[in-house]
Amino acid sequence: MGGIFGCVSEQCAKDLFYGTDYHSHLGTENAGLAIFGADGFGNTIHSISQAQFKSRFVDDYKTMQGDMGIGAIDDESPQPLLIRSKFGTYALAATGLITNKDDLARKFLREGASFSEMAGGGVNSVELVAKLINRGDDIVDGILRMQNAIEGSVCLLLMNAEGIYAARDRYGRFPLSIGKEIRPDGSSPGFAAATEASSFPNLGYELIRSLGPGEIVRLDRGGVRTEHPAGEERHVCAFLWIYTGDPASVYEGISVENARERCGRAMARGDEVEADLVAGIPDSGVGHAIGYAMESGLPYRRPLVKYTPGYGRSYTPPSQDIRDIVATMKLNPVRDVIHGSRMVICDDSIVRGTQLKNYTIRKLWDNGAKELHIRPACPPLMFPCRYASSTRSVAELAAHRAIRALDGETTGNFEEYLDHRTARYRSMVEWIRRDLNVTSLKYITIEKMIEAIGLPEEQLCLYCWRGR
Image (cartoon, rainbow, N blue to C red):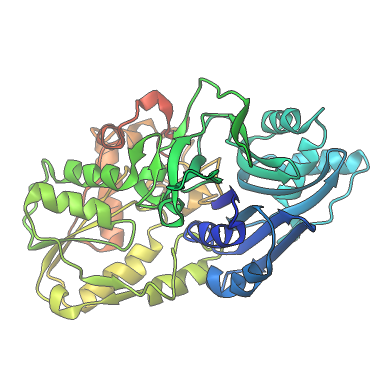
C-alpha cells in the first residue's frame, strides 16, 4: 500500500510537504518529494520506517523552489525517481503492486536493459514502470502500454516541464482524486491530485472529482485536461472503506466514515449479545464501533487509547517483528474502563489475527475484562490481495489456519467456507474464536458489507473474500 500527492501551485513546496504527509498512514518504509521550477528538477528520498514523515522532510521542503511537485509514501520502493528518457526528463511516483514484476524485469534484462534503482535487493517497481512507459510513442501512450503490460494495479503521477500527468489504474481499484485551490480573490487557482481526498481541505483545495478507471489527466498552470478518457469497467477495492482508507476521505462520492458507521449499524442489527459498552480498536475500528453504538443504544467508550505521536498502523510494516513492536506499544489500556466490563469490540477485520490475539485481547483480559465480544466489519479474509502490497500468503490468514486445523491440507475448494449459512463456515468461525480466546465472535456478512459501502456489487473488488 502507498499514497501519492502532486500539485501545481504558487505555494507548491508547502502544499507538497503537507499534502504528502497526509498519506503517511498508508505506508511506513519510504517517502520522497520531487519538485520542478526555474532551476529544473530536484528530489529527495528518506526512510520513514523509524521516524515520522515531517521530521525527515521539514528541512528539505523549506529549500525547495518550484511551482509543480509530486510526493509519495510507499512500503516498498524509494521514490519519486528522476528519469531521463526520449520524452525528456521527468519525475515519477507510483503506488500499487505489479505481480509479474520479476517476469517483466527478466525480459528487460534479456533485451540488454539495466536497472539502477534497487528496492530491498530487487528491482524498484517505479523504475520498472518508467521503462514500460518509455516504450510508448508519447507519455500517454506509454502509460497505457504500461497498464496493459502489468499484472496487478498501478496509479501514478508523472511530472515533466509541461505539467503533471495523473493516471488511475485500469480498473479503478485504488483512488486518485483531483482538487482545485480555493481562491476567493478570483486569481488563477492551483490544482492537486492525491490518493487521499482528505489531504485537500486543510490546504485550501476542494475536491472536484475522482478519476475514472484508467483515466489520464494533465494538471498544469492552465487547469486540468483529460488526456485519455475513463474506461467503463470499475472494480474499486472494498477494503478502502473498511480499513485502508483515511476516515476523512471520499471515494466514488462515498464517505469512508459514513460507510464505516453503516457497517457498525449493520453488525448491531440482529446481534443479541448483552454488553456494557462498545469500543473500537483504534483507529480503523472506531467508525464501525460508533455505528454499532448508535444502532444498539450501548454507550461508546475507550478502553484502549492509541499513542498517536509515535506509532502508525501496525498492519502495514513489512516484517512481523516490527508489526509486533508497534502493536505492543501503540495501544494503552484504560483499566478503569476495562475492569469488570462486558465489551463489544469492533475491528475493521481479522487478517492474521496475531496482533489482535497477542496484544489487544491479552491487554483487555489482563486488565480485568469480564467478557469480550469481537465484531469484525468484514467477512473472514480468504485470499491474499493481488493488487496491493499487503497480505501476500494464504498461510498467513487466520481463516486458512482454521481450515487447515479442521480439514488438514485443502485442495483450494473453499466454497462452503465462504457461505455464512453453512456448517463449515460456522466451525471455521468457532475455531478462530477459540484461538483468539474471546467470549464470542461474529463477522458481518458480505451482503451487508456491500450494502453498507453503497456501491453496486459489480463495481467493487471483492477478491479478498471471493477469490475472483
